[in-house]
Length: 586
Ligand code: ATP
Ligand code: MG
Image (cartoon, rainbow, N blue to C red):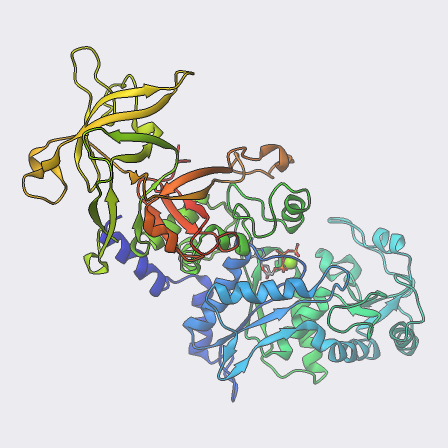
């Protein structure tokens, strides 16, 4: 990639382009909408439920929320929306915290950590629910779940009031307290909000007396067995935002229909004296849809639990732990999120955009190295046995100041199998043997000598066992006169005597189709059988010093990372992060 393009990429990352959210924030800052003593004027939050691993879609939300805080001198909270005790676990809390930090964001601001849990607010949430009941804004419903569903109506069909809707407030309150005291079984009663007298006929289903508290005799990963009633998401979320003085509550479009309840709840509680105005405002953007992956937690879990992938951090997974292990950098993911932008328009982002961001990030960073992935022996017959000549190559072709790497050339080398053809096709400039009167091909061994192919050894099954060449001693790269050899092929190699043998995992996209879970397709029938190929490769000797997580460009092959889990000292295992070019482009 050209330096200009690098500069453009760096510029994109450092100078954020405007989007509708940034415009809203700028407008609010100019108007002083959220100016409050002792608080930043921009406070956002990222609110995951700790019920799974974060994926690339969450990265968009993280970059949007933490990015707004960063760009407008505000702060962003990490808040766990942990109100579903059965599905949640501290394992997920830990990985989510780690992933947010790995992506390069911090919830620390002005010396304070803004790591929050909705469960920290259970007491306050409970008291606010009591207030809503006492003030006639909520009631305890004792219908069966079936009746409740039936009476809710449908899109286009109005609902019917519950027979318990006009239950006296003190009766509801007594029931709610007994619910809390554990006197009832799961589902026996539920607390519902009453947004207006005719709310059950509201066109927006989310306003039809939404449930705000339910009975769940379940152990919570943080509050243990303290509670047997738990607040619902639509009740918890706005209140958590308000308690944390969030200014811009940014979420994905599917929550747009929840916004009227969000606004009603906070306005009602502000009237009740629980919150000062201005209360938080909710804004929605379109979620990330990325081709060649599935992102639903349920489907990702299926891949893990059915052993289709090796775990949540399998390098083929779109989880942040998977992308990290695959070799993605946090910067490349931030760059990707900046490039795809933020809008309200639904659409699909092509996987190549993510891979392109990765290449643009790695190209200037990654040191170069040589790897032969599918080895074929090459013997330089006129090169004395035991002789070794040092060859050098820049660590990075665009940055000479990073120095040179040194590796020896010896009589026996490894080259790629596809750098040899017994009968060359038209325009093939790599190795082929003499044919009839015509001599064998002349090729430069990159950074080494020009050699001429003299013959080939075949194995009993007819396959190529070794290629023979002679070298020209005065053709060494970088020496005077070496340019007088005009050759069209320039191929990479490693010395068989010193090369490091290493397991290299060639990863590719997990699915063969762009939309593996669209239109009722069974995503598990669309797995790419070539998403992982493991080869035993030969690497230039310096690679034995590669540290887990260190990334390289293996020339002609792509970007590779020393696997963080399976590499041992002196014995790295490499993952292919991505190829040099988009091999999926049509
Ligand atoms: P589920 O609701 O099935 O648990 P989820 O992916 O919505 O899954 P959350 O933990 O609720 O999980 O997500 C946290 C935040 O990440 C939410 O604000 C959500 O809007 C956002 N988010 C989730 N998926 C995407 C996506 N594909 N693109 C952008 N933001 C997303
Ligand atoms: Mg969700």
